[in-house]
Every structure is written in C-alpha cells, then in structure tokens.
Image (spheres, rainbow, N blue to C red):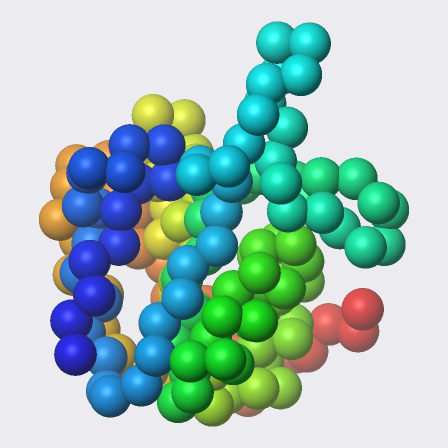
Length: 142
C-alpha cells in the first residue's frame, strides 16, 4: 500500500510517499478546521490535560492494522506531540507513525523504524527515523 503525505499547510503539495503493509492510515492536524481568534490560529484538537488547543506542530499520519485504531491514535498522538507520542509508540510497536513537523521553511518527518518505507517527494524535507531504546538508547522515564 502506498500513501501520499501532504504538507500540513499546503494540502496540494505531496511531501513524501509512505510504502506500507496492508492496514489503515489516518491523519490528524489542524489544517482543515483551524480558526483565527484575535488574529492567531486556534486549532480544533483539544488537549484534555489543559482544556486548551493542542500545540500545532504540523500533522501526524498513523498506520495500524485496523481503521478505528489508526483514527483514534492519530488524534491522540497529535495531542501528545512528537516527543511524548514516541514514548507511547515505543511500547506499541504494532502501530507506525510519521510526524510532519514544521521546521523553518521545511519539514522534518519523524518516523517509527519498524514499518514501511518513506520516500521524500519535495525539497526541504528531512526524514529522521526514531531509534527505539533497545537499539542503543536508554529509555527515558516520563
């Protein structure tokens, strides 16, 4: 299965293609439903820990064997943000994710190491595969 990942701010711009085994993919971000309040963008995805909109870093795409899992986790992982989400994913390796993180004029694509292959399709896209603790790093305690 091949899935095109689009820029979180420019929906017509494919930035990478993700080659995956059969399963389901869901994406979460604020590009579709964000509103401006007092001239500032305000996202529709709320962090239940604070009651405030989740930090808008870009978007996340999640692969899982079942659609409901991919859908629920894409929203949850967006709210957690990349750093906390990768802590979660280290214990749920049956799921894969790609975070599209704005970085200057480009994007940094942070990906789990165990599923699929990511092919960059645009300039200013840097792919970084996260290293799980058993691959050479000590696990950080939250």
